[in-house]
Length: 178
Image 1 (spheres, rainbow, N blue to C red):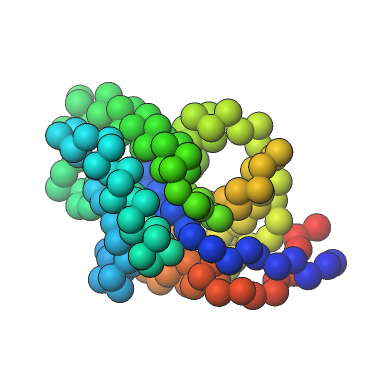
Image 2: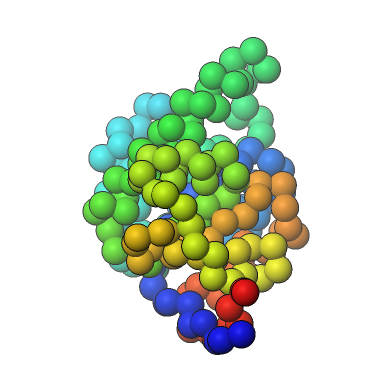
């Protein structure tokens, strides 16, 4: 087992999960003052991208989320179509933000969101490196230097994402997972 240094730098947090656990975790980050944006169909992509770039420059973190409250969800019939559109838009926006901003770590919340973003980026896979905290792995995109942390939507205590983000915002030595 060798110590592995997590690279410090800008973190783009993308939450596509609509689980109450994830929404509560995002609320805590917003209460702490991290810049964020909840996507809407009426807002043009260039505005969101500019806001993300500015947020990353000013605070080192930017949160992009699909919804901020479960009351924003549509009824079951329309829900699945809308979720697919939202996941695709989140993936496209994420790729555009990564193209325009200096991001060291992409922190993705929601398994379906992770898969959609990796597809959009034509990523072949993630090489696992370690865990930021138990249950939140971090790795490197195969053939790239971008760190990717991920968390299942319905997983973790309210402070889990905040604790993992704290690990990314400072330099810390951790043991590499074998």
